[in-house]
Length: 107
Image (cartoon, rainbow, N blue to C red; front, side):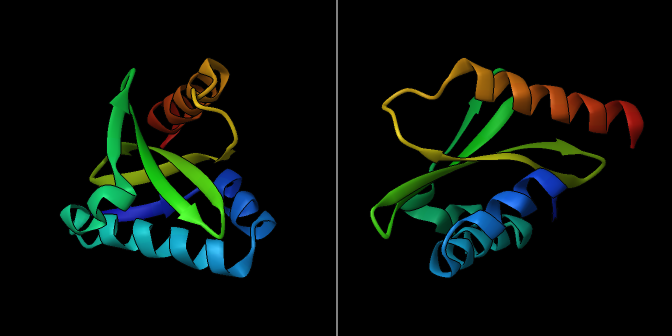
């Protein structure tokens, strides 16, 4: 299933180190190839309120979260964060849901 990287996630990728960006893109590539099972414990996928969250653990001391949804046979990467706290802020999940709703309503 194709992974569409939205402008929000693209801007996030430009803000992280090249190594971190490469690792994130590699994990998203496994989703695209329907090899999500190869993500292992380093790339756990959880579903929260209808949005999927891809955990990318310990890349140069940082952890990242990529939020995505599914629409028309594609994974849409709609939000990304550098995880700094134990719990994900509800505002991040809400923002990802709003962006995914816009995609569903307009694409």
